[in-house]
Image 1 (cartoon, helix red, strand yellow):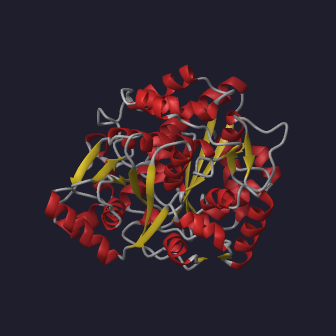
Image 2: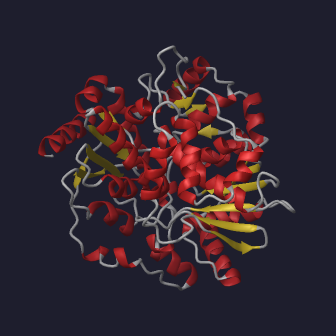
Length: 466
């Protein structure tokens, strides 16, 4: 399996999975995509029904690592990665209402769906860096969950230095403390003045500085790294198989900000999973929903909400879908992305938008509607959901079709957002035992403005200290 950039052509010396894992972002600023979509036959899907989640994940990811990492090595990684999740099924499927299911993706160490990919990413980095006898510096931006999941997966790893940027004052206290109370020497947290898009722009700027990128061996853990997407595809396969695939269609509802999680579901559809609809859930930062409904991909000011992990206006992974909607025309994709950067408005051709509408639906919930959804699902089904997961369930309920199961991605444990849950339901969700002393732990992080030079100096200093 070889990879190409959304802004470049497939070449004879195209990188393999290990290459793009370490690179993160393509040199031309684009995002890596597989040269073609691997296909899973209906018979293979039926055979996979009996596999444990770790073994299923290894089979799916192996389709993208062919020629770089074999399935037996991946199986060792997946079994190790998911061994300590606090549910035997790893990704349990809970029926909330008739044919409306919650796919719980928050049973990992940091209580968010990001653990599903990050626990694998840490092991993948270890494997490839050891093979190549290299050290890498990971720089990532987080709106709340990516950072803690990356830190937990990479803490203490000798071949990795980790720098995580989060928007100062724009995460929940639990989210922030999960990052800033980790004391391992290879971890640096930076609170940036600005919003998530500011942090994301800074990460992209560091990647665009090729001299700096090479100097510190920069790599990425954000979902701009294709390995993140590849490791998220298996749980959509698992849910669909549990509900009758490949002999029955299923739809998914995904609360999303950076578009990576729902893109993984879309990728599963390209691979042969019988997915009918993909429903995007947004909060007041609704650029994705506006695009789905009206072909309006225009940037507005990011506003804080009850669901801070979705407080995003520039959804990086959308570029991957755009590339596909343009029939993989990298020249057109690069031009549209360049114009989007310059004007804040993306001119997606009408025919491409129309094709996207055949699969995607979108819906926005205000904070008040999110609280009402949390209250409703608890009162009527005794299902306690965090704000993000409640948006997913509400959107899923809105777009349910008779006879087709609707699966909503539950992306975070309620205890990550206790204030919102208490206000909506009166229930105080408790942190699990391994985090029960979180608010007693010492925090360690730096505060910085959004000047790229200062951040680069901070990264250099962190590597030197390590």
